[in-house]
Length: 375
Image (cartoon, one colour):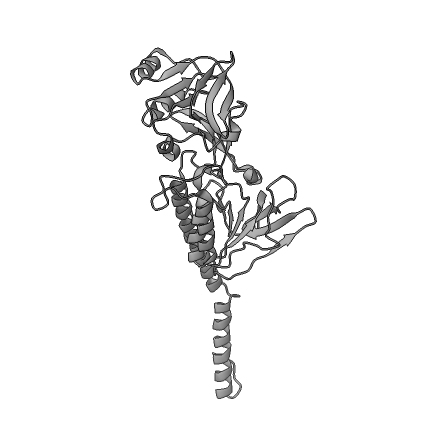
């Protein structure tokens, strides 16, 4: 069993599978989406915890159940004899942060916590792993607007989710950068956390008459013109500079990043990402999956925000746990079918025992009857 991605969803799935005595290998690129954030919020029991600490705790927990964790990036997955052949790249082999430190370890599921599988390495820095099932928890890539200086403040003063960061910037002057039709909704939402909201129309559409009225009713300031750059005071955001040189003070900026599913490794399986919609507007892409994580490709599950772009850390962990339980149930059903087929086979172990008993009875009768044939 291979879990692709070691964030909240992947580790939660691995935890469920490890506790079910499955042999599990987690392959993680070490590039969590929320790495720039100082803390995560809204996760009951973990509010205010740094993202890295949650992952460290999760890794320790899953290792306690025999789960193996390897550093690397899965570059492809292909069907292979009732399972999958997974190719992963070791760290330093190719693109930065890519690869796997699996060193030949494999995720072939044996049904026990200590089972071994098959894997191989190559001179190209790639490792081949075979698995009966895949859980894909690769998450999203944020595609930020090309405003100079914006990316450097991403996750600190440049934000995207009010439920993740709103409390920390409450009552501050907050800017909303419009790049699409959801900007008015975004500005009105952030108004709950501050009375000082400025909507920068930037490259987004002009609000209609109804939207203008709603913005005015809530006291949201609207600024026309494109934003040319970010203004900083030391390491913190202090304002936005317009094309004419005007600087408008803001202490936090919210943007709607493009949300692209990290799903390229699924191309060889024919599992294509679909458009991700929020309020009827396309905001990125997602891997299609049912509530338990099952995808249209047999044997492949997906969990976390690779399947739902609005999922928080806690929601991602919940979906990973749900998928892990579903995968175990699927493997239990498969193992049972195989056991029944083996039991019914005349050349299986049970069949051989029946034949042996018949032969033994015939030999005994033959000996008792003085060498006659068995009846």
